[in-house]
Amino acid sequence: MENKFAKRTQLIKSSETREILKVTERPEVISFAGGLPAPELFPVEAIKDVCNAVLNEEGAASLQYSTTEGYIPLRKAIGGMMKDIGINSTIDNVLITSGSQQAIDLTGRLFIDEGDTIICESPTYLAAINVFKSYNAKFVEVDMDDEGMVMEELEKKLQEHPTTKFIYTIPDFQNPTGRTLKLERRKRMIELANQYDVLIIEDNPYGAIRFAGEELPPVKHFDTESRVIYLSTFSKTFAPGLRLGWICADESFIEKYVALKQIADLHTDSFAQRIAARYLELFHIEEHIHNIKVVYKERCAIMLSCIEEFFPENISYSKPEGGLFIWVELPPGLDAAHIFSECLRNNVACVPGTPFFPNGTEKNTLRLNYSNMSKEKIREGIKRMGEVLHHELEK
Ligand code: PMP
Image (cartoon, rainbow, N blue to C red; front, side, top):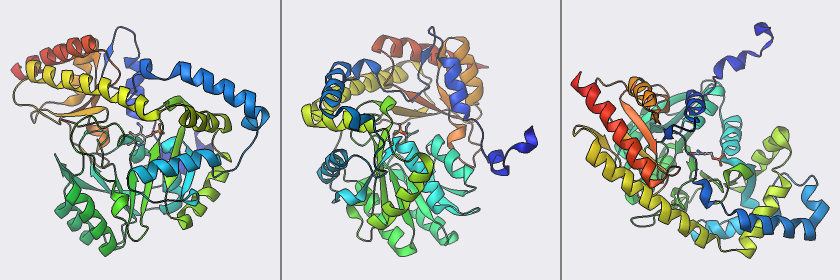
């Protein structure tokens, strides 16, 4: 039956990381592999109350088909959240999506013709790579340092690839590196996008989870030509299982996105949208996010101090001010895939960094997640990883 599949399916592979995650789901494994929020922080009791309120007061409407653009009170509430971070928008600038993953997919459908060039950070979010690859994009990677994408490199790449469609960037606590784009670079990115006439896709699922350092305005805050399409989600601040994300962009883009979303799934889950809207009305999400930050700050600090204590000296790693991930660079010559297998034999899991480089052969990086394990497990897991690393370096 192989010959029955459409040719484009040859571009789609099951994500290696998803395969890894399956292995790491064994209960005895201490896993730093996924990107899962801490489930004990999900507001389960509040959501019970909210579900009752929605069903009692809106009953059938919450179970009915609804508009593609999304539930108006939720779009209004998101408009308010956008304003709080320095993005002016009206309800017509907001489209609710089934997670921001759908927003990334719709972005691929909307902008990428076969062979189009897109620019991204090196490394970048794996599931976005897989989406854009499925539309047959060519990736141009731009180097990062501790302060995010390097703007001189970006300019060079824009000169070399003048027909680039868009820059895909995750400026805050990037997945996979945990790095944040510094303020001057945000302004410079806009200047370059204007000068070279490219769009920017600003993917920001983690911005609200800042637990150290100064708040920074999103890249879109500096956008004077409506060329930034901003994506975000309730996955890290509320509940990923509800699959609620959004796009905030110029109306002309939103209209096109709406037409594509109609083809994809008609609309985002009506009940989930009402749950979120009602939660935002009845509870203080800032307090909930504050609790998340307190826990992640502590877990991140413990992971960093254990890395310092247990990992060999000639290893470098990012020091995130928010989000969920730490990025580890191993000495050249160490193969992260081998380290991963050795760690797994000791019941500890991480993600090898290679798949996060769209064109790449970088083999000596690892991504570690700290949001989903207790302090004790973080200490034990990093200790075990340290033993593996020391052992491999002594070989
Ligand atoms: N973008 C980035 C950078 C992510 O890390 C994630 C989730 N891991 C997503 C988008 C997708 O988030 P969701 O679909 O849950 O909203």
